[in-house]
Amino acid sequence: MIDKRNSDNSELLKAYFEPLIREMVDEKVNERLAQIRLKTEPERPILIEEAAKMLGYSVSHIYTLCKQNKIPFVKKGRWLHFYVSKLNEWLEEDRVV
Image 1 (cartoon, helix red, strand yellow):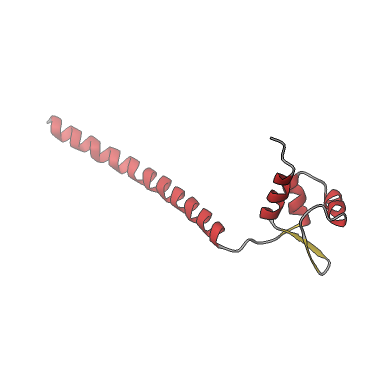
Image 2 (cartoon, helix red, strand yellow; image 1 turned 45 degrees about the horizontal axis):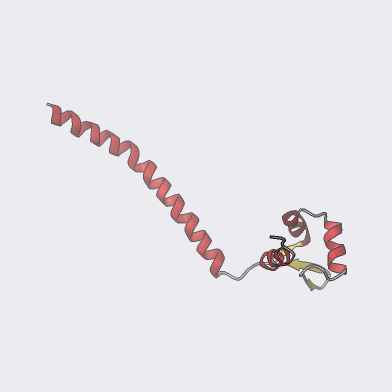
């Protein structure tokens, strides 16, 4: 009788937890795959609004930095493009330990 109850309980636990565990594992696997894709795909440029938001500066200040050639950017036609990796390198240049 006890073995039957234990068996029923384990089946109930399995039925309850298995989908939850599967969902958590799938979520982690998908996160990791997204990270791998980001590392292998070419970096996409961002526009000035995204760069300003990332750096915590106003858009007009970013324009000023570009005009003074103090920040890494690419000008394509009338558009300014920025690469996150280059902006991060630029931030690290003046790091005080």
